[in-house]
Image 1 (cartoon, rainbow, N blue to C red):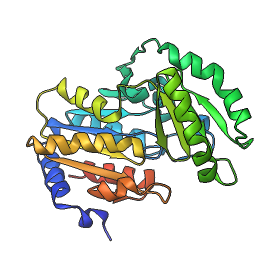
Image 2 (cartoon, rainbow, N blue to C red; image 1 turned 180 degrees about the horizontal axis):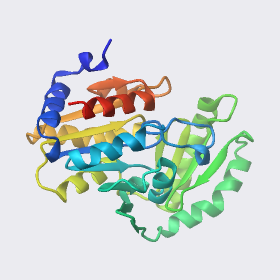
Image 3 (cartoon, rainbow, N blue to C red; image 1 turned 180 degrees about the vertical axis):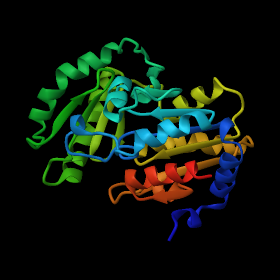
Length: 270
């Protein structure tokens, strides 16, 4: 069955508008789980081999391409192989960082990040976190992963209140994800980042966002707000068995990053 056959009505309107006037459309994407498969070691993540070629072919046909990710922008560019894609913008750390035509803008992290960085290893040790729990230092944020643990969800839930308390003491917020809790500065999320990016441009003919995790719900909210303002939109879920909240909201569900690439390739045939 073609997944496009199951498009929700609003998504079908968005897809028609995108295909009818691609030069005015804004296409946004998450990175991990959407353009790149989820792996046990975040440093080993690489984009699906078809992702960069498809985005490179789409870039001259659409109004704008943007990747909105919790990763540092430069890391997403490197791991995605996106360096040579003209016009692609990468908003890293939920929009705090920006990579645009090779130019990277990175603000200084707030002092709470340094404080949390210093305290986090001892907090995990004292809390009895499994040895397989590990910290990913993103510079502007700190992510605690339990994916390698024997019972990753159990380990995550045991750490949740502890990390929330640390975030409150250091002026940070906790962003949950697929077997990960991320401590990051408040005030930015993928929805705000997407809205700000769109506001830099003329009113788009259509807006698309594809994601896979809880942090992408804010970007889905932004698409819904654009729809309410009369801009056709489409939300795409890179489906998995680990997170179902996005699938419940999406206009279109595809089979992981490979399905996202197939969807992009379908846009290139119209």
